Length: 200
Image 1 (tube, rainbow, N blue to C red):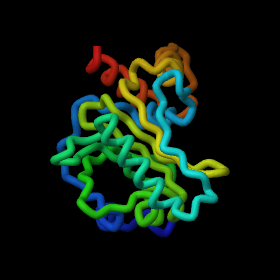
Image 2 (image 1 turned 90 degrees about the vertical axis):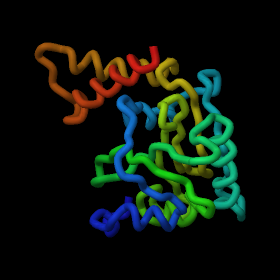
Image 3 (image 1 turned 30 degrees about the vertical axis):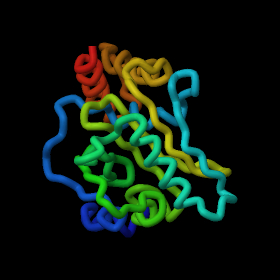
């Protein structure tokens, strides 16, 4: 994330990408951001779907936008009429929070969006996470050495790679004489337990 954007209002920046941030309205048990960021470690046999675009593609931004939209519709990231979902919005260099967002009629996530520093580091260099309002569909946009991709998965609470990672955090927090690997571990473990209970 570009440091010069940290103190600017995210709503104004994201409007450039065709995203309207909505006040309030978060669901009671969204997936932890840390769990959604694990999509990059998941395998196709776990349900991972990619919208890969090679870095040598001269139309990388347009192709990446098209790939993201196709996967978003297929997996049910948003209702086709309201087009609302959860977006992980950075709050500091190290932290982020879920915000409710609406996809406007004209949008550009991988170009103008990534260039804001909130959805990536530069145009064509995405880094973002998203979830459907009910938490059943999640997506991650990320940049690799040879290209970019949108990753989509459904029912994150069932995915072995994600479950193993999150359950390690839960187990570490439960230890009586624990030494947390990070300050966010307890809140993340609690959020994961709420999320899993919501979908039993």
